[in-house]
Length: 228
Image 1 (cartoon, helix red, strand yellow):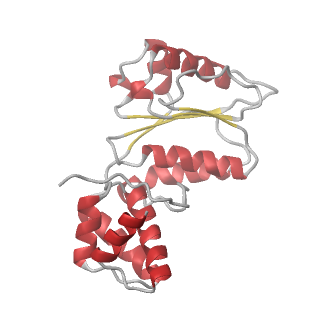
Image 2 (image 1 turned 90 degrees about the vertical axis):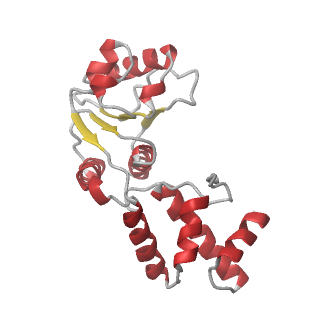
């Protein structure tokens, strides 16, 4: 069955708090410690895993956590076709989707990495990057590939379907709403299956149900989709 991308006016975003770690607890703990520390380690971190393992969620969540603390962040992902020059005001550099970087993006990423690792005012900047494969398997220029792999490396695992169902059930219980097996089947089969999207979907469904003053059912979700 074709899955539907979620685009229904969501109002929540990725945070470290709303990342459901499952088998990825070590990576989440590492980022929580780093993002909250006033003296951050300059050792770079690289996350890798297949689609829906949570890489982009964790990078966006880390950027959010840093900005909440007033930290200036340089961000590069595959959608930024003309990356800016490195900015000395950045305290951290975040590189997402590195496995699909163009030659121009790789050049910028290498430049950012080198500048971030060069002490400025006595302090090095942190680099957090993510890609689909281990550093050794990245099809990137050698100088960038080797730098991405010399620090902390975490392999992220996709949550199993039982784990997704358990998280959905737990989150629904916390909201005081009931999700039937039929509703969860519909959510898992018709929408993006990564957990971040499912949590945002539940948030939207819960809000729509409250507005409609109805319980959460498959027809209610279909009505939300029709009116979204």
